Image 1 (spheres, helix red, strand yellow):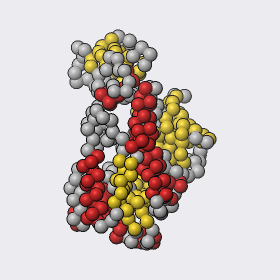
Image 2 (cartoon, helix red, strand yellow; image 1 turned 45 degrees about the vertical axis):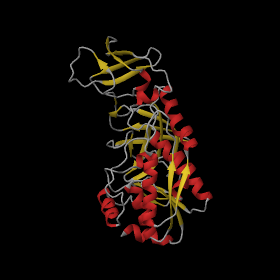
Image 3 (cartoon, one colour; image 1 turned 180 degrees about the vertical axis):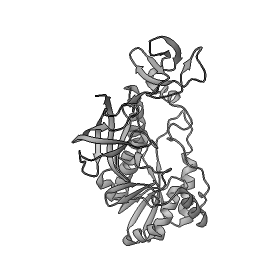
Image 4 (tube, helix red, strand yellow; image 1 turned 30 degrees about the vertical axis):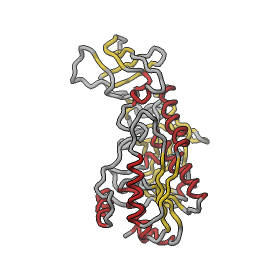
Length: 361
C-alpha cells in the first residue's frame, strides 16, 4: 500500500499518536506500527464544565483498549488547563464580543498541535500523528482523498514547522477502507460511531452552554422594516445566516427566515426570507493569518468560509504579516466575523485566517 511504502522510509522513529478512542486514530496507530515506527498511544484529556456530561472516561478506556490490542505503550496527557484557556474561554469571549468562534480550529492549533506536540517532543518523540483526514507532503497540506471527510478546513492554522513534525496516516484513504482495515485487525473500534461536536458542549445547545457564563436576555426579533415579529433568547448567541433558535409570531411556519443582522446594544435580531450574501468583487478582511506557501496576488485561488462549503473563487489582493484581504470572484453566503477563511490551490491547503470584516465594493 502507498502509505506503508511512504512511512517505511523512516523506520525506527518514535511517534506519539493521539488516540481518541475512535476508529480513525486507531487505524493511524495500526498503520504506523506496521510501517516500523515506535508508536506510543496518548489520550489527550481536555476540560469539561461541571454542568455537562462528557464521556471522556469511556473514550480513554476505549483508547487504552486499542493500545493493548496493538501492544503499544499508553499514556494520558492532561491538557485540561490549556483547553479551558485556549478553547473554552476563547469560545465564550468570542460570542460575548459579538463574533462567531471556531473552537475546532483552536483545539487543533493550541492543543493537538500545540501543547500535545510540545509534550511529545519533550518526551523524545520525532513526530505526532492523528486520525485527521488530510495529507502531508513536507511542510505542505493537501485535502484528504475522502471528500466527505476532508478535515483540512479545521487544520489551516498549522505552521510549516507543525507540519514537518506531524504524520496523517489515514488521509490517503476513504472512511470505508479505514473501517475495513480496523475490522481486519480485530480492533474493537471498527464499527464505533464517529464522535460529534465538541466535548465541552456535548449535546447541549450553544445558548444553554453560554447561559452559564454570560447573562442572556430575551429580546425582539425584527423584520427588515423594524417591525417586531417574534422573540429570541439573547442576541449574542446568533450568527449571520442562522435559520433556527428564534420564535416568529403569526408567521408562515413554512417560510424560511435567516438572521441578517444583530444589534447587541439593543439586543435585537433582524431576520429576512433572503439569505445574507456577499456579491462577487466584495472583499473579506482577515487577521491572524498562517501561510505555508507564498501567496501570489495574480493567482485565482479557492476559498472556504465553512466546513464542507463548495469552494468559491477568489484572489488574495494583499497579504502582509498576519493580515490579508481576499477579493471574491463569485457571490456566496455572508460569512460571520470570527469564522475561518481557508485558502486552497486545487488540493493544496495553503493556509488562511480569521474573518474580521466583509465589505462590498
